[in-house]
Length: 225
Image (cartoon, rainbow, N blue to C red; front, side, top):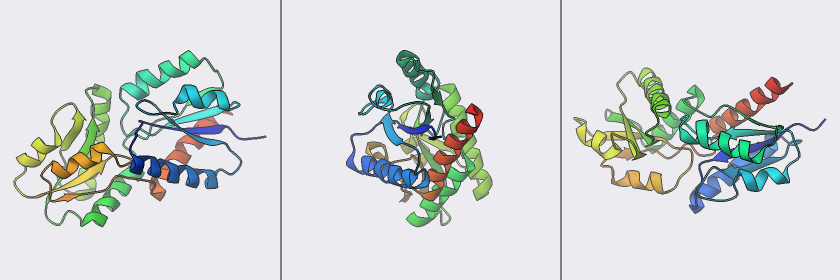
């Protein structure tokens, strides 16, 4: 019996580097799931979106939201899109959230950028005004603080307060930014002007990220059976 199709749902980007990251991730996921159809959809900004991709797939389908916090898209927008499409054979997996495996990836990216090296460490996240998403980001910051043995404040790049540049300016020494983004794009480029001494790359198509997609997919497949 053919396994459920997998749709990785990203926020959406028109950025070439960002699209390249998602493309490489799909290649790796298809290698890990050779018998399943694996596709990408965007929640907004770019196409294809769920309404474009799902009609091309026979059920069942598992949608994995590649979001690091359970904000508006995860809790309201995407369930609404699925309800509009009206397919009972499509299920929504848990989002990425503050997964410890992704904390490991972010710390690896920081080490690749030069490491903390005695600098203050700030977690740079896309940001949200949604209280559930903000709670997820505080959880992530706590996980980083436990790993690093020091407080790790959160700065928001786009939505909500406090903004990254303000958090960086409030530190008493040079800052290393942990980047809590999956793919490169405008948000990551903006961090170059945040005043930090070190800026880590996004999580990207690291083994740990691919592993989290597979774990979310397989957990939802198991729940269906």
